[in-house]
Length: 259
Image: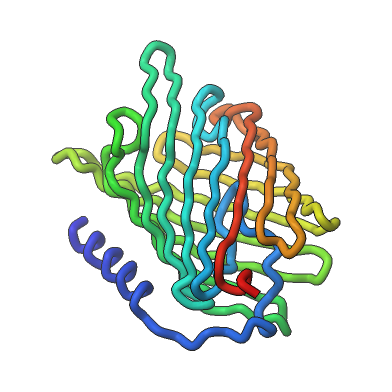
């Protein structure tokens, strides 16, 4: 496991320090949404652009757990971004309640394809989750999360597909490493200032599989500098909460928003 840990950490560092020429803004696919409720988006922040997101997620793991994510993303260049997430969790487990900060996650993402002419965009990234800050809130493990994103712009309809792994390396000696997977797809369409979205995701874990369908809607400000969205995820199997409530608020600073 130490060999895998070294490889993943090396990839994470290389993605941060590698230098590639920036894309011309006119050659990039249109950035319709800043964030998705399920899965990862294909387009990164613009160079020197800072994005802040927060929200309310109920029904991620069970009916009673609530998460308040706090996420910062920064564009190192027009196609490389770094990010950090602070998940504030409220776990209600029938007499064993716990609340606090879970696994803080560092992330780097490289958007290696972004072509307005063909409408295709793609990228890959790596997240590094630290052991839970608060006991019994998150996982007592170092978490590695490699992922891949593919996006298609069809002028009026937009598709986003992401796939990733979650490799949990427990901090306690003798505990086994766990590998989970996620597949997510989103289709959305604009009706300015609204964006209608339908997402589906499958989380494959060691002892269960979570599958959900999530219809939702975003409202965007003029210029798309900030947006507010809500989604109602519906569980598709017995392992998944029947219904949840997701809400997100996202705002951008700097970059091309300075114009």
